[in-house]
Structures are given as C-alpha cells and as structure tokens.
Image 1 (cartoon, rainbow, N blue to C red):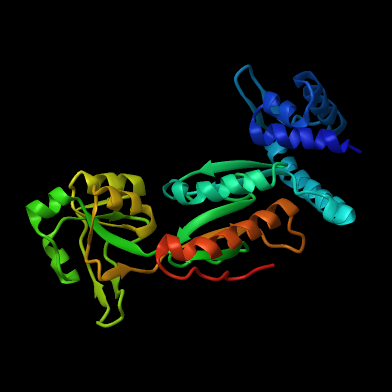
Image 2: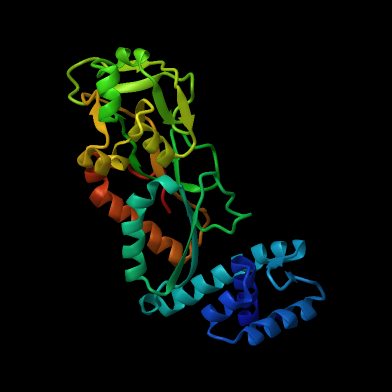
Length: 315
C-alpha cells in the first residue's frame, strides 16, 4: 500500500511539472520528494515520471494514475474534513481556468478569496480556448457563452453580459455617429468573434423598454478572438465595436471610447462558473463556489447594470 504522502507528492509533481515546486508545498527537501516518487514507482513496478534537467512530466501511465489517485485523495480529504467538522479549514491546490478578458472583473474576487482561505493554493490557468477538465486537471472554470453545450459539469450563471456599442472620438468625427441600429450598415464593425457569429442577427434591446427591440444583421470589417485586442482596435479608430459594458467602463470614463446607440444594449451571452458534479464536492471547490456566487450576487448589478443570473443547477 502506497504512503498517502507519497501519493500526494506524486500528484503535486505531476501537476506542477516540478520537484522543487512540490517540495516547497510539502515542506520537504527536493531529495525527499524524489525518494518518495522513486519508492512509489518501485512499489508499482512502473515509471510514472519522465525526468530531464529542464523538465519533469508524467508518463502515459503517470497521467492515468494521477487521475485516479487524485480522486481518491479528494475523497480522503473530504472524509477527513467531515470528521473534523468545522475545525478543518479548506486546503489544497485549486486549479481554475478563466478567459483573459475578464481579469479585471475576477481579480478582486480571487484576491479576496485568497485572503480569506490562505490554505488554498489557487492555480489560475488563463486561456482563450476551452480546456478539458480531465486533461488539464481542472477543478473549476469561468466560461462565457450564449448557450452552454450539454455536459456533466454543473454550471452557475453569474450574470448576463450586456454589450455596449462604442467607438473612438476620432472615428466618430470622421464617420459620423449612428443614431439607430440600422445606421451601422454604413460603418466599419469590429467585434469579438466568440460572442457573435458573423451571420447571426444581433439582438439590440431598448434600455428604457419604450421602443421596439431590433434584430440586425451586421457584417464585420474585423472579427477577433481576443477581447482586449478588439478594444485596442476600437481605441485606434478601426470602427464601431461591440464590447461587454463592464469591460469598457474605464475607457469611457477616460474618453478613449465613446458610447454609441446608448439607448440600446446587446444581450445574449453570460458568464458562468463551472465545476464537476458528483455526490462529494471537495471543500475547496465548495467554498470557492459559494464565495464567488455571493460576490457576484452583491456586485453583478454594479458591474453590468442589470440583475445577476441564478445558477442553472446547484449541489
């Protein structure tokens, strides 16, 4: 039977790709961690890690073993926490992925969580693409979408993403200001390709509710996968851009971008927090979920100018 600390050491090395990083977390020397891995490999009669002067990574057997052992360690930790009750603080490594464009929104909440739960090691993977939970050893994910695909994951809708129509003062000086959505046909359009398909009608919704909403097809001059790049294009005068309202507050305040068609907003997409299902949710996942849901319930209206959403499902 493998020692539990040996198993934990292997999981840390496999995740961090580093003996030094694992030794710091365990509070042991690098040599001690290396001996733990060697003892584990000897007991299993299989190579779990590939080692070189520059890289440590799990073998194919190591990847499969990490997935199964990780589940066992999570259940063991959950059982220990249940026995110790309220005295036990959530701890361990919490690996989360998030899209880069929401850093300014998520960072304050991540910092506040880290201060409240110092025993939880937050490992943030910032990526534009959607990462697989098992392959990347993820615990949770922040994701943006209009309609999420069917999945065994639990999705909590944090808030709707209203998009504002904005442009630089220089662009509006040179090309005029659109007064109605139909006027956009005369302008260069820049938008985030992940939020709106090129040939999909965009839902312009009246803020005051006093006029008809408008579904309008627009043809972009530029579509980009990175929201920050779309913002920079708009500031540079590339055209009229559609961007999440909460992500252009500073630029509008500073005057580098100007609201256009302020009587309308674009609706549809939302920001979600996702995690695995199952009967036993690890304490670190549970407290992070509850912390983020509470935080966005308190700030969703301020961030987006509308009520935050409710979760699709919850343990």
